[in-house]
Image 1 (cartoon, one colour):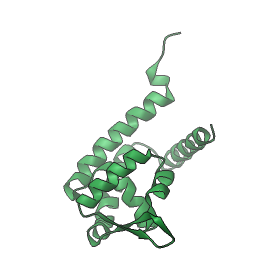
Image 2 (tube, helix red, strand yellow):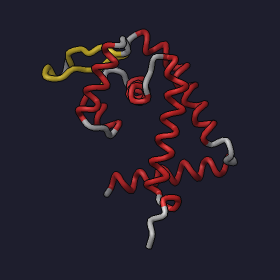
Image 3 (cartoon, helix red, strand yellow):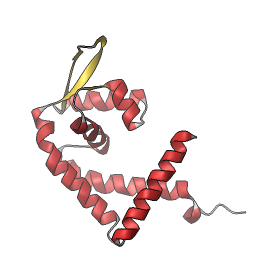
Image 4 (cartoon, one colour):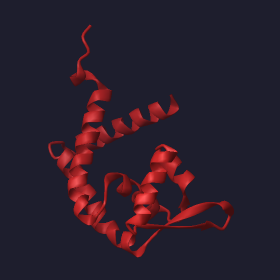
Amino acid sequence: MRFQKERSAGFLANQMARLFAKGLQRRIGPLGLAPAQFMTLLALWDEDGLTQSELVRRLDVEQATMANTLTRMERDGLIERRSNPSDGRSQSVHLTERSKHLRDPATDAARAQNATALADFTDQEKEMFLALMRRAITAMHDD
């Protein structure tokens, strides 16, 4: 049987993620942010002072990817690293004033991208779609 990409959850999820990232980049780029930085800031806006390892676990990314993202964020004045008082071998990652001030415009940009992506959905369809996505993510985490 021929592979039908229009019936493949993986293909469609990948295409949707790429299009979403492209739209998000267009919206947050003027703020000086990239999607990976935004994702990291979301975690830090929820809980400032996480370690790199905690960010890796929460965002489900590779250690090297997170290290590179944090290096760029530090260079761009979005975060600062401090010795972790509870574990001298690690550093905690903290928001700067600049990144604290970016929270509202960046999350507004993400909301706008979400609204664009789901514009043709009814409220019930949006809730169902998001619930199904969460179930698929959970299933793959348990795999």
